[in-house]
Length: 339
Image (cartoon, rainbow, N blue to C red):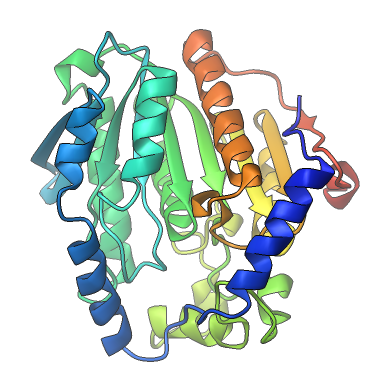
């Protein structure tokens, strides 16, 4: 069943959008801005571990090394036996964010899904090339899938990526094709409004000043800043843009994006290709902007509950892959959009 959307939810979303329209948009104008935002983010996270422990969740910070790549991880454990593991890759435009920034979402997954949540504290593009960020996520995945966490051995694993993290999650899954035994341990992927074409899909290039959350007119130039010295053809190389990479062996996926998100075409096009190899549940949320799952709206809560239910189903299936099909979304023309 698709995410249920009613008129009250839409009214709630419109009120939130009216507030967002009065707020600054995020965009890469300079190298200094992300550093300032990152510093403010870290200040806002003070005391976060204590909040999680008061909810009964265990918190661990661990640094692992895989294939010569060292990466810090943040691990949340539920109070009881785990039914599965979530590998979380945070967003932030590749230039801000850390493993703590999804604590609220990840605590919900840990509690609702009885999941161990491993969040990757990958390097940021302010101090490392994009390929290094993918290397960090691949190292974390290889460590986890290779039974680096003993209590997770044999448990199904779901990978979650949001925005830039959706890009890194998809790129990591494609890199795992080189080790099929590890890729087969992935029971599912939840991809929230990811960036899959680093040269920009049509909806990115069409984004205007009315775009919410993201600085629409500067999105394409921001992608160019992320990949200096490359032309659009090079940015669309499979190693950088998952939309153009191979999808053989991919797990079932839940793909979620708002219809007001300039990254809409990225999700639609990836789903169009992914459905040829695995089950895809595609959810297009009416009037939802980028990043909407973090907003205090009924639509965000319903979406998170839906994702939790989907993850529980993947844990229960134990990683068995369904036949390829596309689940039609509510109040959208998702199926026709993919033809």
